[in-house]
Image 1 (cartoon, rainbow, N blue to C red):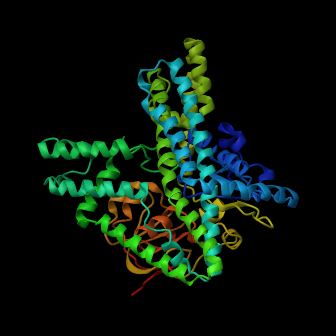
Image 2: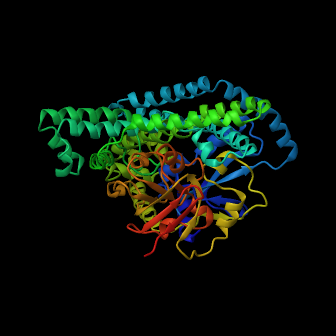
Image 3: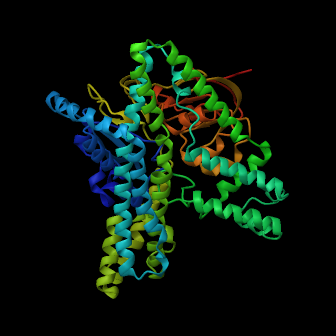
Amino acid sequence: MTEKNSSNVAEWMPELRFREQDGATLWFHDQIHHNPPATPMEASIVYTWTRGTQVASEWIQFPYSRGFQMIVNDGRLYPSIIPITDPEEIKAREAKFGPKLMETLENWDGFYAGLVTEWNNMLNYLKGLEKESLPLDRLLPVLRDAENTYKRTWELHFIGMYPCIVSYMAFEQECQKYNINERDMRVFLQGYDTKMFQLDRALWKLADLAQELKVADVFDRADKPEDVGRLMNETSLGQVWWTQLENFLKEYGRRSTAAVLGFYYETWSEDPYPVLSTIKTYIQKGGFDFEEHSKKLVEEREKLIEKTIASIPADSKESFVQALRNAQATYPYNEDHNYYCEQWCSAEIRYVIMECGNRLVNYGIIKESGDVFFLTISELKEFFENIIANEKIGLQFYGPRINYMIYDRKKFWEDMRKVKNAPFIGTVPESSGVDPVYLKVWGLTEEVIRGGVNRKDHEGDRFEGFPGSPGFVEGNARVIFGDNDFHTVQPGEILVAPFTNPSWTPLFSKIKGVCTDSGGMLAHAAICAREYDIPAVVGTITRGVRVTEHIKTGDRVRIDGTNGVVEIIRD
């Protein structure tokens, strides 16, 4: 950690500063969720997801971990597991964990429906507010409500996630008893309708509709949303299409165009460019039969299940089938929760904070509404409280200080975007502890941690990671680092990226393979690749290498998703 970074972090959030005693703990950069660097506002709110893990661990009495904690390093957020090492405490929690898990899984549909109901109630409340018309003394309570909604959303997120991943791991162990390979295990779980599929299906329908209405040529004449909208609205059929796009954005537009756990970046509703560029490439590809694809996945799944169950000894069938049913019931949660937590919740809190930024612009405190993200949530609340108490004194006391403070922080944030940060900091413990999220979302096994921390410069054209989705494929690489590059991805290319998240889902129906620096077996790239039946290798950083630093766009590459190997093919 640089001295400059230490000074800056201490200035706006001392509780997240990397302290000397933190060096005894292993911290990892969560590139999947926390990239690029967080703004002060984002860090002051987003870090509370770790509180959600602690609430969930206590709720389910998970025996081996209390969840996660977090620090800031080089402007990025680094979580760390909180292991439980006392044998007596582990034993006591184990006695409560099993029954709580079974109770949850036996009523999973009702349990999950309860989570969705609470998410909907909280988020629809924020969505329904006419924030721009609220006086400041009403907007401040809404800001507090948004902050509390975020905290509660992430409690619910992990209350659902722990039983979900544990049931996946239990089924994984059940399969190992009968030498069922990883590919077949994943086939057992494929083909279920999810919000991920629903979104992509809706995008393809918009692409098909543009062709049916004979307005697809608009995408050849314009790229910017305002230009596409203007051309569409020049004709009656174009107006029909644009109305359908607006309906799509009402349902799916509350998601970031960039950082999965950030509020600084615009949502699809604010800037539909990622949507329009994706539709354009879908038109170029020429169609994707979702119904036929889904039918194929289901038929393959059911046929393999029938064959496998028939081969299992009679006295073991019941336990195998139960583990299978639990895994099938909970597996879609791995992606579906993103709609509510990472996407919708993040969008609603962004909209509230942006309205706060509008007020600061009106007061002449900041130049752009987005500059509000370079305050922390506590600072923003304190400033509003003082303005409400005495507007003249509040503006006089805070105004000049805030303006200069934001300038300095923004410059620091921009500098940190250029820093190549370490994947791990701190010390590898004797045992890293066992946490299902740690293992399956990030793939941080003991072997991986020790290899990643002790990484060496990579030589050669062969890279290893997790076998995220089985199969073999060769093709031209397309290396991208964020949503700004989505429009460059061409049908039939192999996607190479630091990570993927739900905002990247529309790319998967036009690529033929994927490789990522980050992620484990339940990371977005792995799950999405399995549903689209394309090979994937994920988490090369867990083997000490960022594949994005070695493969270049246009390189001919081979992906072995069955064994977790990526190779550059040289002439």
